[in-house]
Structure formats: C-alpha cells, structure tokens
Image (cartoon, rainbow, N blue to C red; front, side, top):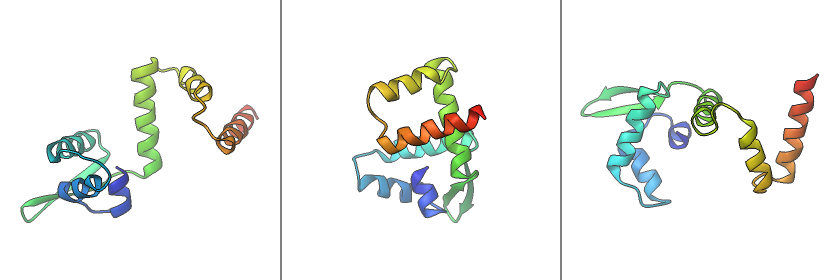
Length: 110
C-alpha cells in the first residue's frame, strides 16, 4: 500500500520493482497481495492494454485504521490493551510517540 500511496497508479510490476530495491520478493507474492488488497476494498483496478493498473480506493488513514482493526481483532481478540502494553514494554515507542499517546488519552477523557 505504501508504494501505491507514493506512486498513485501502479501495475504489479511497478510495485514489484520498487519492493525489489529494498528486499528480495517474488513477483507472484506481490500479485497475490495486491489481489487480496483489492478484494478487501483497499485497491481498485482497471485494465489498460494487457495489464491491470491499481490505485488506492481509500485514503491512507482509512486503510490503516481498517488494517489495525483487523490485526487487533485477529491477534488480540478485539482488545487493543495487550497491543499497547506490548508496545510500551518492548520500548517500540519513542519519547515523542509516548507524549503523543498521553496527549490523545487526555483528549479522549475530556
């Protein structure tokens, strides 16, 4: 999704070549993931000549919210609390991120 958001209209080959610059990935894996993202409604495709061109169907924030929600449901049985505890205990949040979380908690209490 990051590649799609960065580039706009892309083919599977576009995404594959971009990902290949960072790590080894199979073309078929990229194609499968893009089909899954389309099925979930995160991507739209149209046929141009002999290739499908994909684009994001929703804004980044909406897709991330949906993906995080699915993750919390699947991994933590719908409770975000264990995820937050894990992130805090493993020090995966910077001081700035912790400050932002604290600010958001205060705002939600008001």
